[in-house]
Amino acid sequence: MDGGAGSAADAQAQPVAQALPPPLPLPQPQLSRYESQKRRDWNTFLQYLRNHRPPLTLARCSGAHVIEFLKYLDQFGKTKVHASGCAYYGQPSPPAPCPCPLRQAWGSLDALIGRLRAAYEESGHAPESNPFAARAVRIYLREVRDAQAKARGIPYEKKKRKRTQPPPPPPQQPGAGEASISSSAAAVAGGGEGTQGSGSAAAAAPAASATTGQAGGGSNTSAAAAPSTSRV
Image (cartoon, rainbow, N blue to C red; front, top):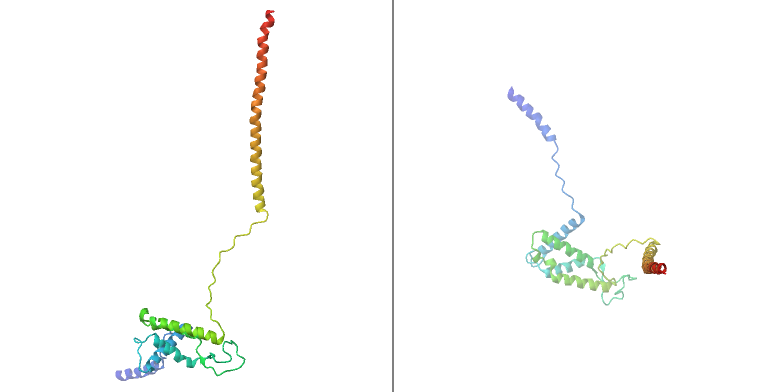
C-alpha cells in the first residue's frame, strides 16, 4: 500500500516539473557600434587569411599582406574613382556616368586599418609585430588618398583642432581712466603748491628775524643814548 501511494505521488510530481519553463539565459552586454564593426572586420580578415593561397597564418602576416587585403576589398567599393584618361578626371560632380571602376574610399580604408590595428593588439599580440601599423601600410594609404583626391577633385584635409584662446580682459568703465588721471594730476598739483607754500614760509622766516633784529638794535641804541642825555 505504501509503495503504491509513493508511485502515485511521483507520477503527480513529474508533470509539475515538466511544466516549469527553462531558465532564461543571462543577458549579454550590448556592444557599441564601433565594437561590433571591429569584430566583423576582424572576422573578415581572419577569413581572408584562411582562404589565402597558399594558406597564411596571422603570425606570418606582414604589411604586404595587409595591402593585398585592401586591394581585395576594392571590388566591393562604392566610390567612383576616375582614371587619368577619363573626361571627368578631377571633377567632383561629373554630369554623366562613365565606365571608371568603383573603389573603396580612402576614408573607409583608413578607418578599417585603425579598427584592425586595435583588434590585433586586443587579441593578445605584441604591438611591435602589428602588421596593420607597418610603414608600408601608411605609405599605401597616403598614396590612395592623394590619387583619389586628384581623380575626384576633392582634397582631403585634416581637421585642425581649434585652440582655446584666453578670454579677453573685461572692458573698463567709461570715465574710470580719466578719473584716475585727473586724481593723479590733482595730487601732483597739490604737492607742488605745498612745496611752494613751504618755500614761501621759509623765505619769510629770515625776513621776520631780520626785522626783529633791526627792532632790537634800535632799542639798544636808544638805551645807550639815554645816559649821555642825563650827564649833560
